[in-house]
Image (tube, rainbow, N blue to C red; front, side, top):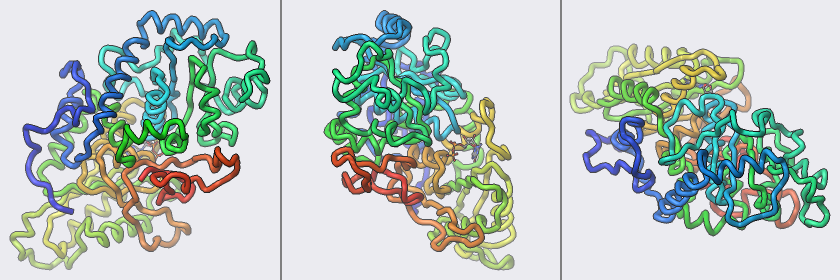
Length: 486
Ligand code: GDP
C-alpha cells in the first residue's frame, strides 16, 4: 500500500504507451487526452504487436465501415438474404448487441472487439441502451456505432436462443454442418447469430471450438449477444492461441489494455469524473475504492457492513478504530489522509462508515474521509443520467490506489481492469447470516471473470474441467464455475 504522492508528471504518456491512435480532436473528447494524468496506477504497457494490430484494425474499420462502398455492398448482400460464396477480399462484420447493465455492456463490447480483431472483422456496436451516448468514438475517422435505421435485420435486438439463424439452431437443423455436402447451402442465410448469453446452450457454446470457428468464418455478417466477458473462452480456441500470445505476452492485461483503448468517457461524463475527483479525492495520500453491490433483497445488511470493515481492516486498507477519546498525538501520521470512495445503489453503507470514522479515532492516527457520488436506489434501464453516473463511478473506482469489490459484479470487474488493480474481493456469504471467514481475499488477477463458460473440451468432445487446459486460464476466485486469465 505504498502511498503515491504528488500530481502525475508532465511526461506522462498521453497515448498510453501507443495504445491510442493519433488523429483525434482534443476538444471532442477530453478524457482521451487527460486520462493519463489521473491514472497514476496504470503501469502496464501494451505489446508492440498489440499496438500494430490496433492500427491495422483501425484501418480495416475505416476501409469497410459505415459510409464506404464496401459497407453499402455488404448491407446489400445482407438485405438480399442469401449467403454469398466466399470471396477472400471482401469485408466481414460483427455486430455486438448491447443490453443488460453497463458493466455487462462494456465487457460484451470488449469481447466482441477482440473476437473481431482475431477474425479480421469490422466491429459494429449496437448503440442501444446508451452505448452510443457514454463514450467517445474509439476509431479515428469512422464510427463503431451501427446505424440501426439502415440495418436490414430490423429485429436483431430481440435475437435470442430460439432465433433460427443462431449457430446452434443452424447446426441442429443442418443448415450448416461440418461437412458441407451434408448441409444444404441454398438454405444458408447471409448471417449467423452467435448466442452467448447467460442462457446459452451447450450447442451455442460450441462457438469456443476450432471446428465451429471454421464454420463461422464464411459468414460475412455475424451478430453476437453476450452479457459475459467471453475472452478466457477465446484463449481456449487453438487457432487463436499463437496470435493471442503475441498480442498479450501478459495475458492478465487483456481487458486493461482493450478497455482503456475502447472506452473513453465523453465530455459530459468526464466532467462528472474530474469534478468529483478534483474536489474530493485528489489531495488524499491514498485513495481506497469500495464497491458495494447487493444482489439480493437485503439492501441494508449489517452483516455486509461487518464484512466490509473486517475485510478492509484486516488487510490494512483502512485503519482500525481507536477510542473516541484517544488523543491525536502522532503529528507525522496525522498528516496522512485516506479518501475512501464508496459506490453503491444505497447510501446506508457509506453513512455507517462515515459515522464510524467520525465518531472514533484511528489507531494509526490517519484521517479517513468517506465519499459517495450518488445513491440511485435501484438499477434503472435506458436512463441516460443514471448510466452516466454509473460510468463515472466505475471510472472513479478505477482511479483508486486499492480497490475492494463485491464478487460476481461486472461493474467492479470493469473498474479493476481499467485501473490495472488486482482487487480484494468480498466473497458472497454461503449463508447470508454469517460473515464469511475470511471476509475477502485478493484476487488472482485484475481480469474480469467469464461467469458462464462451456464445460466442454473440444478436443476430446467431452465434458471437462476447462480450467486445466491452458495454464493462464484458471478458475475465478468469486465463483468456481467461472474462468479468468491470470
Ligand atoms: P453487475 O450487475 O454488478 O454485474 O453490473 P452492471 O453494471 O452490469 O449492472 C448494474 C447496474 O446497476 C449498473 O450499470 C448501474 O446502472 C446500477 N448500479 C449498480 N451499482 C451501482 C453503483 O454503485 N452506482 C451507480 N451509479 N449505479 C450502480
